[in-house]
Length: 341
Image 1: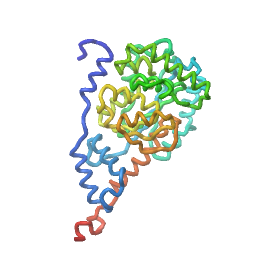
Image 2: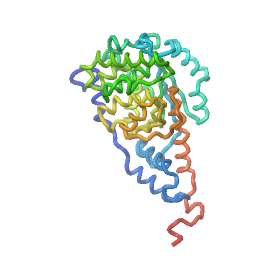
Image 3: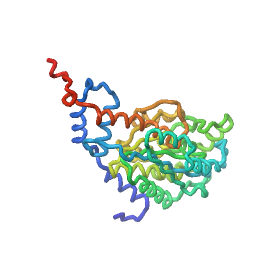
Image 4: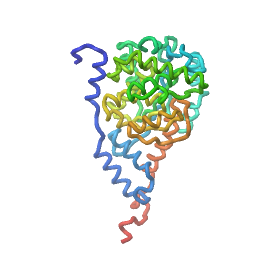
């Protein structure tokens, strides 16, 4: 029961409900791994990935029967400041491309057998221009967070992605508000702005953070004032996944900014998340270090739409297949290291 009735207090209460890792399941995975027909540790991080799945699914034999990519799409008022070379209409066009199966994310999902859901978060109603006003009010931000929580239904691993012209500007503003420094430390070229566009982007981030500065001590205020609907929904999806014991694969620069909101409230809030890749946006590597997460891939990608997260799932699926399908020394009739003494 929320005694204040304030929407954000409902979100704050969820942090107290987050389960920890299922250590007995991890022990079971390690016991099986010790019997597999390979030297101990020979698969490196693939072995760690299976332990991670066991810890956060709460299963001694983890599964990837319903891996799901979820992409949240939104538009941003800050685009009026000339921060992107593309108009907001591109967000809608890309949504149609996803539906038609023509985007990169469609091809990666098909390759690795991943489900794909794409959500239109009121594309025809851009958020407030953060250089002039808050992106969202508290009620709208909390409702979108709750929508994100509902979007994960049925998944046994969740890959998070986004689509939204202008949202690397939003992400940069979130990072500066949480971690300090200058706007230029966090704002990159995003979808490919030229030098003049980058200057406008840096200026927009500076003005936005200055405008809202007195409210930015609360990460949820950062989310609603500087974020967007996809940021709120991604944060909600990460939280719901934790509560339902669904491991999460984070995509790139923008998705990670939503995760940063939760991490700023509770540093262990992302323990059930893997970092898929390090983005070509330079600041992304800095944030992952703050999270203590080593990305699985480093391919110079900066597309968004969950593409890096989906691609990294190929590694995760291979890791689990090795653990589940590889023969043990006993079943293969191969002498193990102990029998050789």
